[in-house]
Image (cartoon, rainbow, N blue to C red):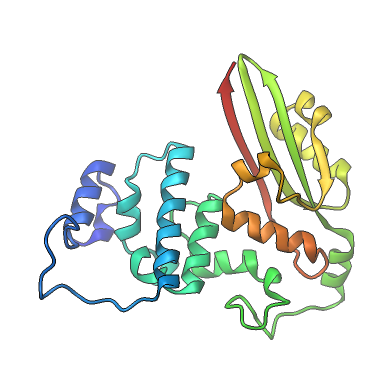
Length: 242
């Protein structure tokens, strides 16, 4: 059965079908097993994607098996599965952004590439670099107006303690406060701790923001004029019973 045909199947059944298409890792190695040559760096990329996938599925209550996601072919990787594709840096970054920003369970590669296109301006070896990209006057003017803002919100509400992190580009802190009010309510907006840029050492930020996304935000904070990511808008919530 083609792995792509499992989309309409229950998550558990789809997982069993997909994993059955690959060698059982509990079995002994065999001479006919396909050999894969990889550096420690490449193996670490795959491990990090697997960790990020499992963390997101748990965080968002996604019923699919994370291992099934890793083994199924994805449009994001041109039809490859994550284990094969994420050995390479470009696909690794795409996977981290897909899960970190919760952009569905699959996406067109160019959709993810656009999110990081501007962040690559200062990295000539980056796979996101596009020398032909238009950097005309309108874009420069927009970059002069917009800056990365982040906010930490901690509020007790309805028998819960809500911890939230927000990051987006805006012309002022007032705009950020309006966005927080629209999503979390007036009380959350009034007590939100808003700052220009991001504090990567803040314990709440470290606990709530996936490492790959935190790295992108830190780059944006250091280079606000050259690394604007159009449409970037992140809100992460954690709710604990009081």
